Length: 295
Image (cartoon, rainbow, N blue to C red; front, side, top):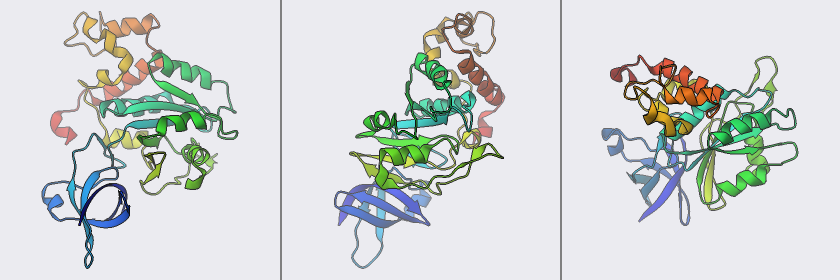
């Protein structure tokens, strides 16, 4: 008997597939290895249900998108969670995550937590709202903002990411108490949180799925999610109206070039200085990388 479903967890070579009548434990067929394919959490698959043998994943349907680390596919929304303090909001880390989401055709939503600790959350919110993003300010101690996040999840496949200690698991517990995810306190000595999520797993809820994504920090992005210098400007959506207006637009790096419309927009206050600063940092990291070095 064959069924279609979605992989919601993968551990030790076993994959757990959510089908219309339940969750099935499966192994992947060997031919995937020959094709250079590895089943990934979020994959839509066809499986065989076997009475006297292991259930098998027979086909992986075309993916909408995929993240490399942690491996997660077919994402609609990426909630980028950053705390205003403890740890302090880092615009560069946030902008890296946004750029990866844009590059993968995933809609980013900015969530700023620990609003009870500082009024600076409104300043950061203004930066990203003016760039064209949805921003939600959250106070996990009071549960405020959780309903606004929940309203965006219905019917979608969503991931929550950000550096450890920013309150991802606490937020998810406020939205869906039944998840009962483990949470960890921020290390005062290191200024970062302890890892509390060990594997990537989709949780079914509200007609969609949510994932708490471990290890998807700025360090992982630098290692696994490089964006070419040619593609990078298109990952900053507020740059788009200006990209073809540069004096030497075919060769413009949009960093400090003479006659650059993006730089002029920054000087005119139409593009946030911190967003452009993040772009310049990312551009300088990839500008000299050759195509063969990306493989």
